[in-house]
Image 1 (spheres, rainbow over the protein chains, first blue to last red):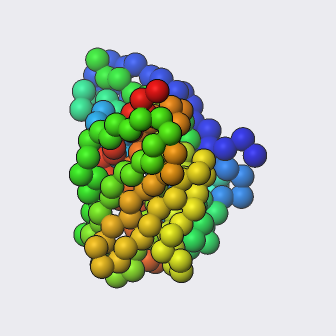
Image 2: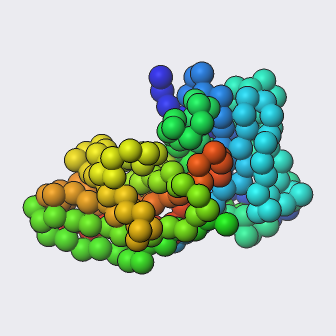
Length: 115
Length: 113
């Protein structure tokens, strides 16, 4: 078990470009979460999946953001037409999915810088 | 709506002294409460959680936290601080039966040798 894996760890992109982040959860974890963290703030919830179903989306997730988990394993988070305000660390997390008595484990995060 | 308050942006403590990082929360119904630690440019590492039962929860690296329902608090404690404990600590809350975990803004712990 290698933990939650995120790729790339760092991405610098020009404003207006599209970016995609990938997350590989801990094996056998049914739930997968995406959070966003900006400097000096705590992580903010974006969305979560139970297997392949996306069950909740935050209002922070504008139309330019889309997340998928097509086979209930890895997930991707795509940001279209990036803006400078999208610069943040995007955190992926996973849990077994046994109610809230299980623990949410985070990856190392993917840093996005929009220039 | 649920919320978490970490009233101290930074806590300084001498190595070997006890430490406390404060957290208060607001949530409807019974809460699930968590503490995570974050080292520079890293993700969050789980420390401990309160689900139900004993109000004193023991976690990783010698940390513990006390759930106080009447004061809606969940303070993180450690009897003897280490320099390696220096990091950013986040308290988080989730209503029972719900999946969205809300984090506080974090408290930077500085342990002085």
